[in-house]
Amino acid sequence: MTKMEFIALLRTAKSFDDFCTAQADLLSVLPELKIMLDYNIHKENQPYDLWEHSCRTVMALPKGECASDALVVAALLHDVGKPDAKMHGTNGDVHYPSHALHGSQLVHAMLECPVSKFASWFSEEEAKEIVFLIKHHDDNFRKANYDFKLLKKQPKNWLIDLCYLEKADAIAHKQTDEILQRIADAERMLQVAN
Image 1: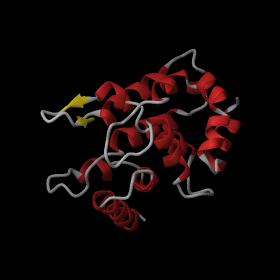
Image 2 (image 1 turned 120 degrees about the vertical axis):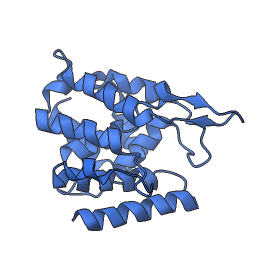
Image 3 (image 1 turned 135 degrees about the vertical axis):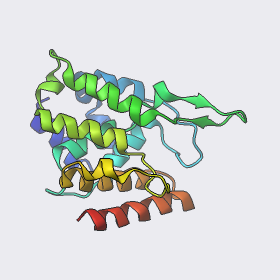
């Protein structure tokens, strides 16, 4: 699988079956995806396993040129840190409080690997954006103490991509009031970023 074929798959997949058909090719390029297969997220608002949720996030991105290569890759990998970040609450519920950080660190290592075909596909700038998007995809913009200064230091297209990723991630969940609020927040942030 070449970079062009990989990106084309991410941009044109119309169903989860398209990803399943290409699963062996995707795993040959990114063996790290294997941990996502059949991984039960154990969340009420998430009816899919981690792999299907990530694929649905990619499919929920806007189509066409507005979806950068970095954005579609980050959408596929945005929750890859969940298995390492899994924690159980006192009442038995499952949380992933640092999954975005774990995921960004894992993807950073993947993009730095000198023998990785995947790493060779992306420029330093693209790699930085992919890691940034994964690290911040779960930020809560509604928090009163959210530090927007960090975001303002980034290129404008990164902020727009972050808003698209936040929205696509929310769309790929079961639609609860909380998730609908996340979608509305991402749409508001997108208007501000544009």
